[in-house]
Amino acid sequence: MSLTDADKGWAWIILVASFVENCLVGFSLYAIGLIHIIFLEKFKKDITLTSWISASFICLLSLTGPLASYCIGRWNCRVTMIMGSLLMTTSLVVTAFVNNILLAFIFFGVLSGLGIGLMFTTGLIVIAFNFEKKRNIATGIAVAGCGIGPFVLSPLYQMIYNEYGYNGFFLFFAGLSFNACVVGAVLRPSRLEVSSKMANNRNRTLRKTCCECDLTVVKNIPLFFVCISGVFFNIGIFIIYLHFPAYAIENNSTQIEVSWYLSIAGISSCIGRVLLGMATNSEDVSEDIIFFGTYSLIGAATIVVPLFINIHYAKVIYSVLLGLNSGSCYVVINTIVLRLTGPDHVAQGTGYVMAYIGIGSLVGPPLAGVIVDNGGSYASSFFIAGCAKHQTEREQKVMRRTD
Image (tube, rainbow, N blue to C red; front, side, top):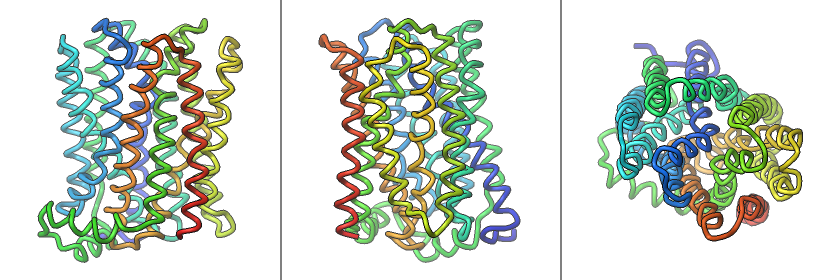
């Protein structure tokens, strides 16, 4: 089998495949608040307890990064993508028939989260392996799928749930995730992927892999501050993803309107990621400014949104801002990691960053649930979310002093 060359030929087919995979990931992320409402209606438990199901799912989407990096080094991107798809599909089918919140936590929160985490990290790394000169624009196009997914599927999701209920929705979700097997099938190894694999010794054990990661990636101080920024940002962003639907419904929105807010955020995210990818492909635009600057913009919008939450058009505007800024970091993350770690450790470096992002994803949603369950409000949790995102700007200043 021939190997893929960077920036040409089969690399563009792989870009399309990564885009399709990100459509599924985007639907999963933007719909997590609506899925949270489904679990609340199904199990009738308090917000904090129910939040752990969705928090585990979105946490493992990122926290699985080191495991995905190991699987890519041990096998390749194709095998890792197909493994993730099969694990997620099987877990969602089981979730469709559980009647216990603990089983929902295990099969949706943990096992489905592991599956989509393998898929998501692989979808990022495979772009780094197949593009060089056009890496930023390629990454922007690929992660734009995260916006197209919710734009197309969020209203459809609501109709499926209304028509077929809990069981039908999760079976539909499982069918979507199975399509990632087709995505995995077209991920031919590239020359950079093979050379990276040889440099890292394909027969290395998991324990040895972790040891090398400690020596080459964990001690990288600038990369560490990128990771800390990811923690704070994702504490904030996943409070929003999980609780914005319930917050909007509490303030005179219907479930159909909420699904359209998510669609608006999705298409805005798609446009924003492509435009940022085009912009950062120029040497005159700093990836660091894009990575950290957009955090501050959405942070400010999140702090003030409780003042206007009763106004329909204010929620529409916030959805646009959320989409434009929330996923911009993923456009440049490959380039930043590659610059800080070098090509031989790009897979481990990306996995390391994704693991820290997962920590923030786990902390944010239950934190908001505790606030609401103990007499607070969604407005309070959104204020915390906005402050967390502003904290990333401080990490940028520290990173630049250590880079």
